[in-house]
Image 1 (tube, rainbow, N blue to C red):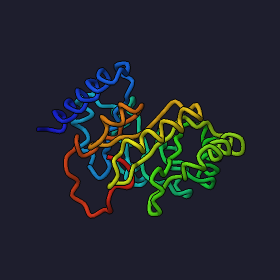
Image 2 (cartoon, rainbow, N blue to C red):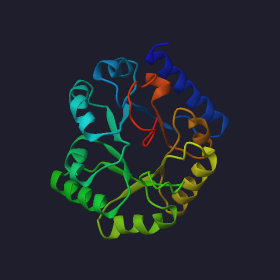
Image 3 (tube, helix red, strand yellow):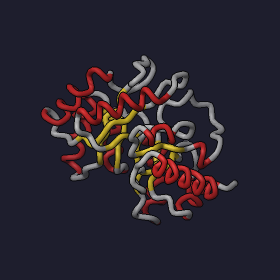
Image 4 (spheres, one colour):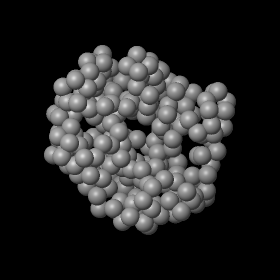
Length: 230
Protein backbone atom coordinates (compact mmCIF):
# COMPACT_ATOMS: atom_id res chain seq x y z
CA UNK A 1 0.00 0.00 0.00
CA UNK A 2 1.09 3.55 -0.65
CA UNK A 3 1.20 6.19 2.09
CA UNK A 4 -1.96 7.70 0.58
CA UNK A 5 -3.71 4.32 0.79
CA UNK A 6 -2.61 3.84 4.39
CA UNK A 7 -3.82 7.35 5.20
CA UNK A 8 -7.25 6.51 3.78
CA UNK A 9 -7.38 3.36 5.90
CA UNK A 10 -6.48 5.25 9.09
CA UNK A 11 -9.12 7.87 8.35
CA UNK A 12 -11.68 5.11 7.84
CA UNK A 13 -10.75 3.49 11.16
CA UNK A 14 -11.02 6.84 12.97
CA UNK A 15 -14.50 7.53 11.59
CA UNK A 16 -15.61 3.97 12.32
CA UNK A 17 -14.40 4.26 15.92
CA UNK A 18 -16.09 7.64 16.33
CA UNK A 19 -19.39 6.05 15.33
CA UNK A 20 -18.86 2.98 17.50
CA UNK A 21 -18.08 5.04 20.59
CA UNK A 22 -20.79 7.64 20.13
CA UNK A 23 -18.44 10.44 19.21
CA UNK A 24 -19.57 13.01 16.62
CA UNK A 25 -18.08 12.53 13.18
CA UNK A 26 -15.02 14.75 12.88
CA UNK A 27 -14.51 14.97 16.64
CA UNK A 28 -11.01 13.50 16.30
CA UNK A 29 -8.15 15.22 14.47
CA UNK A 30 -5.55 12.99 12.84
CA UNK A 31 -2.01 14.27 13.34
CA UNK A 32 0.14 12.53 10.73
CA UNK A 33 3.54 12.13 12.38
CA UNK A 34 6.13 12.83 9.69
CA UNK A 35 9.24 12.93 11.85
CA UNK A 36 12.34 11.46 10.12
CA UNK A 37 10.62 11.41 6.73
CA UNK A 38 11.85 13.79 4.00
CA UNK A 39 9.68 16.29 2.19
CA UNK A 40 9.37 14.08 -0.88
CA UNK A 41 7.75 11.34 1.20
CA UNK A 42 5.41 13.79 2.92
CA UNK A 43 4.22 15.39 -0.33
CA UNK A 44 1.98 12.46 -1.41
CA UNK A 45 0.23 12.53 1.95
CA UNK A 46 -0.41 16.25 1.54
CA UNK A 47 -1.66 15.57 -1.99
CA UNK A 48 -4.08 13.01 -0.52
CA UNK A 49 -5.65 15.79 1.55
CA UNK A 50 -3.92 15.51 4.94
CA UNK A 51 -3.35 18.94 6.47
CA UNK A 52 -2.27 18.27 10.09
CA UNK A 53 1.25 16.97 10.70
CA UNK A 54 3.45 16.31 13.72
CA UNK A 55 7.21 16.69 14.09
CA UNK A 56 9.49 15.68 16.94
CA UNK A 57 12.42 18.06 16.56
CA UNK A 58 12.45 21.79 15.89
CA UNK A 59 15.56 21.70 13.70
CA UNK A 60 14.28 18.87 11.53
CA UNK A 61 10.97 20.64 11.04
CA UNK A 62 12.71 23.92 10.23
CA UNK A 63 14.67 22.20 7.46
CA UNK A 64 11.70 20.74 5.59
CA UNK A 65 8.42 22.45 6.49
CA UNK A 66 8.73 26.11 5.40
CA UNK A 67 8.67 25.06 1.75
CA UNK A 68 5.85 22.59 2.22
CA UNK A 69 3.78 25.14 4.13
CA UNK A 70 4.45 27.81 1.52
CA UNK A 71 3.04 25.48 -1.14
CA UNK A 72 0.05 24.49 1.05
CA UNK A 73 -0.59 27.35 3.51
CA UNK A 74 -3.48 25.64 5.28
CA UNK A 75 -1.17 23.00 6.76
CA UNK A 76 -1.20 22.92 10.57
CA UNK A 77 2.10 21.85 12.12
CA UNK A 78 2.31 20.31 15.60
CA UNK A 79 5.40 19.93 17.79
CA UNK A 80 5.06 16.60 19.57
CA UNK A 81 8.62 16.11 20.83
CA UNK A 82 10.42 17.57 23.85
CA UNK A 83 11.13 21.29 23.62
CA UNK A 84 14.23 22.97 25.00
CA UNK A 85 13.92 26.58 26.13
CA UNK A 86 16.62 27.69 23.68
CA UNK A 87 14.40 26.48 20.81
CA UNK A 88 11.33 28.44 21.94
CA UNK A 89 11.83 31.22 19.38
CA UNK A 90 11.94 28.81 16.45
CA UNK A 91 9.11 26.70 17.85
CA UNK A 92 6.80 29.71 18.10
CA UNK A 93 7.78 30.81 14.60
CA UNK A 94 7.12 27.46 12.97
CA UNK A 95 4.50 25.50 14.89
CA UNK A 96 0.76 26.05 15.19
CA UNK A 97 0.32 23.68 18.15
CA UNK A 98 2.89 22.68 20.80
CA UNK A 99 2.02 19.49 22.72
CA UNK A 100 4.95 19.33 25.13
CA UNK A 101 4.85 22.15 27.66
CA UNK A 102 6.02 20.50 30.89
CA UNK A 103 8.03 22.92 33.05
CA UNK A 104 8.08 26.54 34.07
CA UNK A 105 11.22 27.40 32.15
CA UNK A 106 9.56 26.31 28.90
CA UNK A 107 6.35 28.13 29.77
CA UNK A 108 8.26 31.32 30.50
CA UNK A 109 10.28 31.09 27.28
CA UNK A 110 7.17 30.44 25.18
CA UNK A 111 5.28 33.32 26.79
CA UNK A 112 8.15 35.70 26.05
CA UNK A 113 8.41 34.60 22.41
CA UNK A 114 4.67 34.69 21.84
CA UNK A 115 4.55 38.28 23.06
CA UNK A 116 7.56 39.23 20.95
CA UNK A 117 6.34 37.56 17.76
CA UNK A 118 2.63 38.20 18.15
CA UNK A 119 1.94 34.52 17.45
CA UNK A 120 -0.28 32.35 19.62
CA UNK A 121 0.20 28.65 18.93
CA UNK A 122 -2.12 26.40 20.90
CA UNK A 123 -0.37 24.91 23.92
CA UNK A 124 -0.84 21.51 25.55
CA UNK A 125 0.76 20.29 28.75
CA UNK A 126 2.50 16.92 28.51
CA UNK A 127 1.67 14.66 31.43
CA UNK A 128 3.96 11.77 32.37
CA UNK A 129 1.14 9.40 33.28
CA UNK A 130 3.54 6.51 33.88
CA UNK A 131 5.95 8.54 36.04
CA UNK A 132 8.82 7.33 33.83
CA UNK A 133 12.07 9.05 34.81
CA UNK A 134 13.47 8.95 31.28
CA UNK A 135 10.40 10.54 29.73
CA UNK A 136 9.38 14.18 29.52
CA UNK A 137 6.13 15.35 31.08
CA UNK A 138 4.80 16.60 34.37
CA UNK A 139 3.72 14.40 37.27
CA UNK A 140 -0.08 13.91 37.08
CA UNK A 141 -0.35 15.02 40.70
CA UNK A 142 1.29 18.34 39.83
CA UNK A 143 -0.65 19.02 36.65
CA UNK A 144 -3.35 21.24 38.11
CA UNK A 145 -0.82 23.47 39.91
CA UNK A 146 1.34 23.71 36.79
CA UNK A 147 -1.58 24.63 34.54
CA UNK A 148 -2.55 27.33 37.05
CA UNK A 149 1.00 28.72 37.03
CA UNK A 150 0.98 28.76 33.23
CA UNK A 151 -2.17 30.84 33.37
CA UNK A 152 -1.49 33.16 36.30
CA UNK A 153 2.30 33.58 36.28
CA UNK A 154 3.13 33.19 32.60
CA UNK A 155 -0.07 34.48 31.03
CA UNK A 156 -0.51 31.43 28.82
CA UNK A 157 -3.72 29.86 27.62
CA UNK A 158 -3.48 26.09 27.96
CA UNK A 159 -5.75 24.30 25.51
CA UNK A 160 -5.29 20.70 26.57
CA UNK A 161 -3.17 17.78 27.71
CA UNK A 162 -0.97 15.17 26.04
CA UNK A 163 0.44 11.82 27.15
CA UNK A 164 2.54 8.90 25.94
CA UNK A 165 1.81 5.75 27.96
CA UNK A 166 4.70 3.44 28.90
CA UNK A 167 5.35 0.98 26.08
CA UNK A 168 4.91 -2.02 28.38
CA UNK A 169 1.58 -0.89 29.89
CA UNK A 170 -1.96 -1.24 28.63
CA UNK A 171 -2.71 2.26 27.35
CA UNK A 172 -6.33 2.50 28.48
CA UNK A 173 -5.72 3.46 32.12
CA UNK A 174 -3.28 6.16 31.05
CA UNK A 175 -5.76 7.60 28.57
CA UNK A 176 -8.50 7.49 31.21
CA UNK A 177 -6.26 9.35 33.65
CA UNK A 178 -5.51 12.05 31.09
CA UNK A 179 -9.20 12.40 30.27
CA UNK A 180 -10.03 12.73 33.97
CA UNK A 181 -7.41 15.46 34.41
CA UNK A 182 -8.68 17.26 31.33
CA UNK A 183 -12.23 17.20 32.63
CA UNK A 184 -11.19 18.43 36.08
CA UNK A 185 -9.21 21.31 34.57
CA UNK A 186 -11.80 22.16 31.89
CA UNK A 187 -9.27 21.61 29.11
CA UNK A 188 -10.96 20.67 25.81
CA UNK A 189 -8.07 19.04 23.91
CA UNK A 190 -6.66 15.58 24.62
CA UNK A 191 -3.70 14.44 22.53
CA UNK A 192 -3.36 10.71 23.07
CA UNK A 193 -3.16 7.56 21.01
CA UNK A 194 -0.59 6.44 18.45
CA UNK A 195 -0.45 3.95 15.59
CA UNK A 196 -1.05 0.91 17.80
CA UNK A 197 -3.67 2.26 20.18
CA UNK A 198 -5.47 5.26 18.68
CA UNK A 199 -8.84 3.50 18.62
CA UNK A 200 -8.62 2.91 22.38
CA UNK A 201 -7.75 6.58 22.82
CA UNK A 202 -10.74 7.70 20.77
CA UNK A 203 -13.04 5.63 22.95
CA UNK A 204 -11.67 7.41 26.01
CA UNK A 205 -12.04 10.92 24.65
CA UNK A 206 -9.02 11.76 22.48
CA UNK A 207 -9.46 14.83 20.33
CA UNK A 208 -6.08 14.38 18.59
CA UNK A 209 -4.42 11.08 17.69
CA UNK A 210 -0.79 10.99 16.57
CA UNK A 211 -0.26 8.37 13.87
CA UNK A 212 3.05 7.99 12.08
CA UNK A 213 4.27 4.51 11.17
CA UNK A 214 0.77 3.30 10.21
CA UNK A 215 0.75 6.01 7.52
CA UNK A 216 4.36 6.52 6.49
CA UNK A 217 5.71 3.04 7.15
CA UNK A 218 8.76 1.85 9.03
CA UNK A 219 11.31 4.43 10.15
CA UNK A 220 14.81 3.22 9.38
CA UNK A 221 16.81 5.13 11.95
CA UNK A 222 18.67 4.45 15.14
CA UNK A 223 16.73 6.64 17.53
CA UNK A 224 15.69 5.46 20.99
CA UNK A 225 12.29 3.97 21.61
CA UNK A 226 9.28 6.27 21.26
CA UNK A 227 9.50 9.45 23.27
CA UNK A 228 6.99 11.47 21.28
CA UNK A 229 4.20 10.09 19.17
CA UNK A 230 3.48 7.67 16.40
